[in-house]
Image (tube, rainbow, N blue to C red; front, side, top):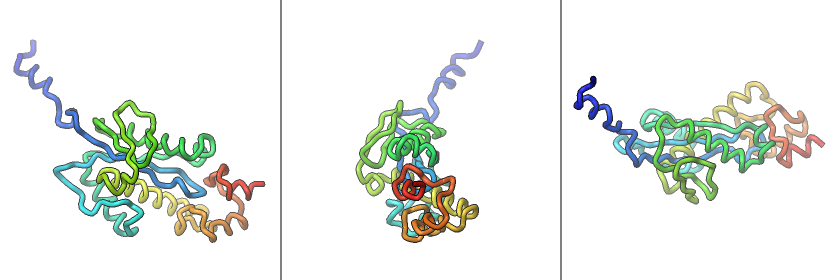
Length: 205
């Protein structure tokens, strides 16, 4: 029979089981004409802060890359998830974005007490959640999530560029730039183009 002392020790909650852990969630890639929408969820470590966090769009690519590595090293845990171009076409971009966010939260190694999501819509979660407009500039954990999502998606575009260099994905990241639209007209669509998006749909007619 186990001693009372051992039973007491066994029932003591681990530090990450106590209420209070907060995850920030953000996405990247809602606007592009191709590729997945990417979401990230981050639980920062208050005892090991990351300096210089900001909305990913306000940072240089080099600074985002630096912070990406620092966030991954210092955060208590983080998770990155996607919804594919095919899921975007099937569900619509809003619902696919919320699905990616849900996957990111569910992928966290530690369960947060609360989730703070950038914007004004929430994914379906079993955890207390709050939507915060401009959260990527107001909440450090959301800023961190925006950086992870942005860098991950940019790297994905650079990798995919190797398969379809004629579109220039490494430079415009799938956004509807003049160069991208010209490439669409010249080469047609590739497997990662979002066929439900108007500029792509027009090429398919």
